[in-house]
Amino acid sequence: MAHILVIDDEKIVRDLFRNLLEGTGHEVAEAPDGEAGLAAFRSAPPDLTIIDILMPVKGGLEVIEEIRRDHPGAKILAIAAQSDSMLPEAEKAGANRSLAKPFLVQDLLAIVEDLLAE
Image (cartoon, rainbow, N blue to C red):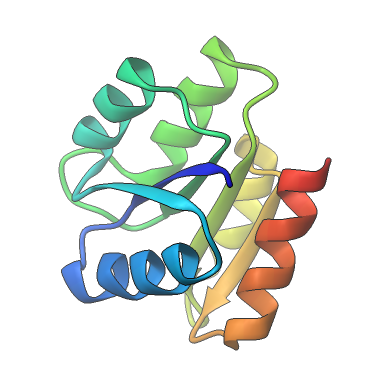
């Protein structure tokens, strides 16, 4: 069982991730924006962080850069709407992998397991 932090401004997306990931035995923490996400990361560093790119308060790219700077070994999955061209930028900022919304559940779970196994 891994500790996974989900940072996304949409409650429905956070709920979806919580249900999927807890259903596979993981412990899930969540944050509604980048500032809260960084605070949650710093107080209890997770095994994996899933970060939405477009958020109010502090955007996902900035969050990824800060986590990567302070915790070079952190595992990060960036998510964004398929129409958003920011996913390549997220990987340049330090995300290990990226995933476009909407996504297939099996794709998400496969990426999560791959990242946790690394």
